Length: 101
Image (cartoon, helix red, strand yellow):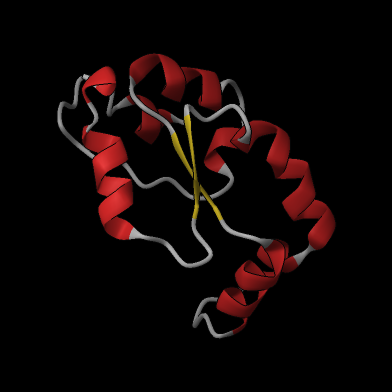
């Protein structure tokens, strides 16, 4: 949380948090009030396959109950972007849209 709050005065910066960051303390509210939150929504089967080939052992990331428990926080993001097969130009367009200035 402390590192997240150190980004408060950053401008024109993308901060990529870990998947659990929005789920602790008041982080999702803090993120929403200090910037534009984007949920890269990846389905459980895709997430499971991605973590299976990860070099880093991440047992919590592949638990369906853990995945589902985080959804209540992720749904508070200002933008939900389907990311199983992400269309990066579309995501960039969303991020640069005038209503987010």
